[in-house]
Amino acid sequence: MQLAHDHDFHLLFWITRGQGLVLLDGMRRGVGAHNVMFIPAESLYAIELGRQCLGHVVCIPVGTPMRLPEIPRHLRIREVHAQSELTNLYETALREDQGTRPLRHDALEGHAALISVWLRRQIMEEGHAPAKRNAAQRLSAAFLTQVSQRYRTGAPMAQYAASLDVTPTHLTRAVKAATGKTAAELLTERVLHEARLLLAETGYPARQIAEHLGFGSAAYFTRFIQQHTGLPPSKLRSSA
Image (cartoon, rainbow, N blue to C red):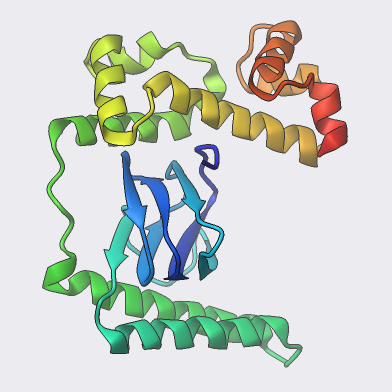
């Protein structure tokens, strides 16, 4: 599965064929054809789609005037007209994005606004009310929110547990039940994803990246990368 991570922009996935798994809002669940997933900026998620999976995704900058949900949403769209409507909206936006017509940016904003209207209309449907979460799922969601906010600090798991007013053992048990992974594994994934991204896409030295991610030393950062990728930072960067 893709490493757990988050973005500084919103995402809207529309799966039209195939199956997969998604970690979203503190829970791991299956996804299939005609599923919509809205992932707000800074919401930790991971998605694994099968080889036969097809779909679309829209990236929406933070701060746009359009109205969007404030929490992650996963909808299963069963009504054929609604499925066709969203597919047409995506395909129209894609044609605009690939074209060279004047006012292209304004047109894309308009298409994105129509997609957001479609999403909010679906959310208003009675059948798409969020399922009630149990205590473990609520705790898992709260933990993943903290991870997206604090993963660069180097804070140990005990600090995360204390801030959520639970023991590390209870936190680990709850997150494992909700996601299939322990709290420590998901924190490691978020740090590793950021480390790999910085090594691949920037020229910052490993020492500076280690400091940015809260590691006590460059040597500890090197051991972390070696342990989880099988390569030291220098080779991981050159192979990217």
